[in-house]
Image (cartoon, rainbow, N blue to C red):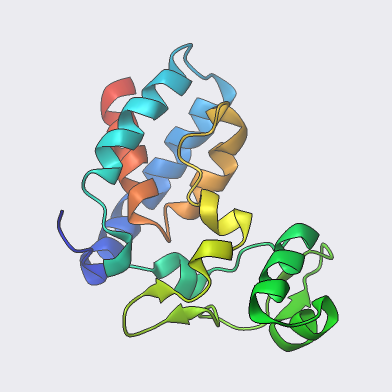
Length: 165
């Protein structure tokens, strides 16, 4: 597994972003029958070559949505009440979802790129980048956003384009 070179990744994103987003838009409107099966195959390939600990770009530049269940679990893990946890670490966005107050994520160790609450992390983090959902077509809008942040998503879209065009 090669470490993620963020400089190279950002250059690739700038070069391919429009084509990838256009491809995903077409895929969303007219998905092939084997899309979910293809996503499973590509997922295995992508994770065989992606080392998240050399990247952590999602934790540095995005925020998960914290569900009430997440808040309860993480607050208990930290020995805090739910209100104390939300007051200290979270804010509500325009949709009234709970999100981090700051970026990078307060639970990211910037020296190791490891999550200090990994065992109890939000479900949104545990599922990120959502490459292999049962109905991939329902997550294409998420992939369109994530190609700019996640090398695994970028590589998934690249491989899918190669196989479907």
